[in-house]
Length: 309
Image (cartoon, rainbow, N blue to C red; front, side):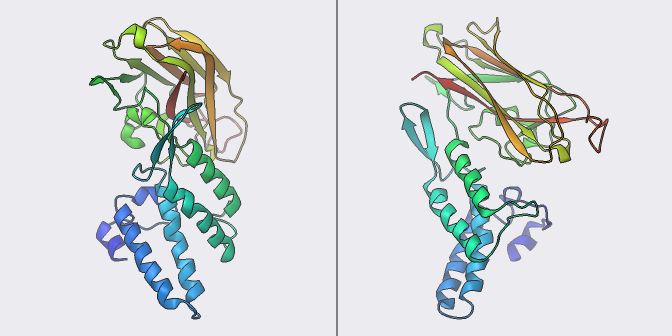
């Protein structure tokens, strides 16, 4: 409570651990809370309070697991001959089964009011551990012989409400989850179009042989967030002339579930200097929506470029 009071933040029912990562749930504070609770468990062992103290550890474990989705410190790079560079998180991998076991042991059947149970959380989290961190040559901050590798241009400005409107969230190596408050870039009532371009200082003969390009979109219709009507992925060998390698139309139908949809283009390995990804916004909420006529949001994250190995 002292850390909460000092943070001057409001503790609401819709808050998430990610939102408070820099206030009363910093990595250092979570570690401190776990140390205190571990000491309490030692003292309470074989007493009537043992189960109560154990149950009190679960929210802190949950906060740690959720913040793994936005932090990099506990990930370890591992090279896979088929998939290229992958990331593992031994700390989260070890804690996840203990957390799920703890939920079941204390009869916490659901994590929230929509019936999200422990087994589904575990399955979703394992998917995040396998796919949530990615590496590719188009990442922000990547350099080649000291030269910045990639520039990123947006045809329409994103909303500053999410990810501070920073375009580089699209190539930071962190894939978005089902919460649009972090790791997503939002576009209200407009299309999305991003062009990634490798430096002209990079010799053409040494350009990466790209074989896949993927991008993710979010659906949360209750919050006016819809998949785009159409997604187009284009590549350019010279950085000037583009050709489409994938077009995909998406039916917008009533669906109360939050969902992430990954659109991927797969093609013969091609030395690529630029990539363009477009998502067509349907404009306004459809007639069957409770907020018909209001502008739709597109949320997009992580344009991932796969190379031939």
